[in-house]
Amino acid sequence: MPSKTPGSPVRALTSLVTLPAVDVTVAAYRVWDEAAGLLTLVVRRVRWWSLVRSRRSAAG
Image (cartoon, rainbow, N blue to C red; front, side, top):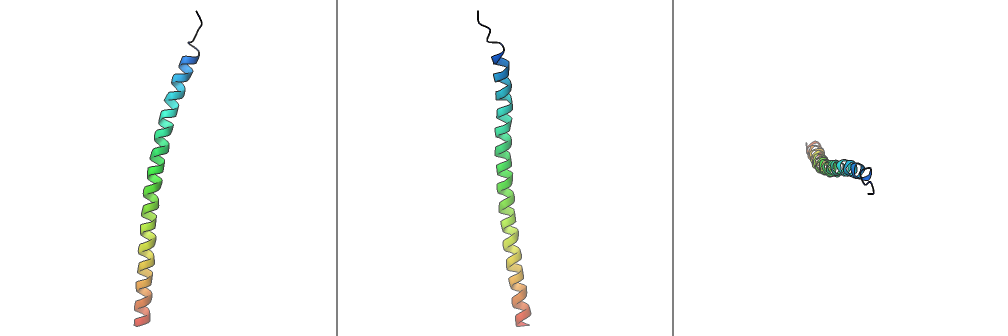
């Protein structure tokens, strides 16, 4: 009877490590996407605000 026991716990451990790694990668990507979107929003707001302030100072 060939022993398959050494490979099976290793395979189980690998799948156990791989699944959370994929989850972490997806979560990190989502967080990065959210952060990038938020940063873009902030940058646009700051640019718009500086444009408004420069126009006000030029007009006044």
